[in-house]
Image (cartoon, rainbow, N blue to C red; front, side, top):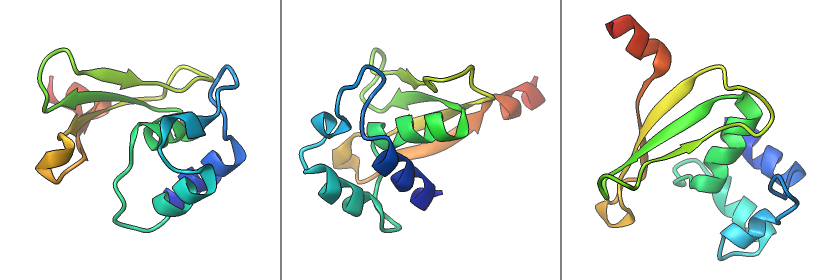
Length: 110
């Protein structure tokens, strides 16, 4: 999956309106892609957007920073097949994103 996402970013280096995705990282684009390639590297908002576009899913992100920091990342091309709910821990908590559940699991709990 990681390889697919990095390849997607390599082949799609701009956002919807042509904004270079490099604008959202502190690294030159080739360096950023290389840094995202190894297993164990934490993803970021750019890789979540790529995964959303690539797999046609949405991510609802709940932050450890509290209310008001929630965000939803959705595919730019179509209605998502499902929504995954992720927890995001602030960088200083030595965690990043964790999957809490997806909407299909929520429906099973009803």
